[in-house]
Length: 118
Length: 126
Image 1: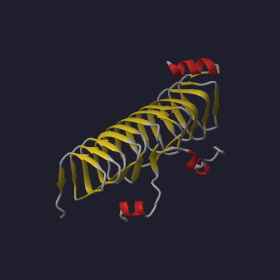
Image 2: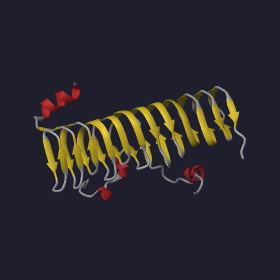
Image 3: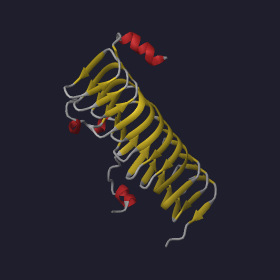
Image 4: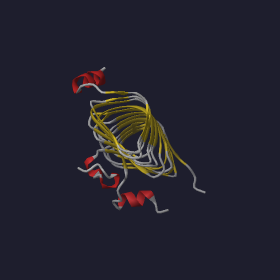
């Protein structure tokens, strides 16, 4: 399977989208890719790529393969591969991943832990 | 926009699209236009149009302005304006709507209540 994150940056369309006015409250799981543009409260347990859009607010413990963040996240993040925090996101919580990227202008409050690759 | 064929629906019109790998348990609120192709359990509220895909399974109470169903719903449905069930969709639950279409081959196990638009709107607000 091609790298989901690479596909994302090559403008491969993300199929599942949670729209900007929506409010999701509960437990979510998915395999492929998903983008949140609205409000999400609960748990996310996925094996794919999660993108948190610019105006999104997420209050959740997140588990996914790769996570790209543009919006606001409150909760612990656990990625199998990469976490990218891009301007002007806000993250409050502990982050665990193989690779972590924190861009200029990001507000991050929490601990970082790098998982050693096998 | 034609709704007679699910594959012809223009997805760009919808701001929330939930694909087949999507599984969710909980409440979905304030969604404008929504396509569900995966699994949802709990409660769904949509202010505009809700489309249920052919392989979707909805185990939830549904509240929408317009409903186009190609899949399976287990739960009670309240639709403010119009509900359309395409063959071979299934509804196990009660439905309240002013305008209702069930195509030949659809399955309905439940009660149907047809009110005027206004009284259905009031019910939605409650």
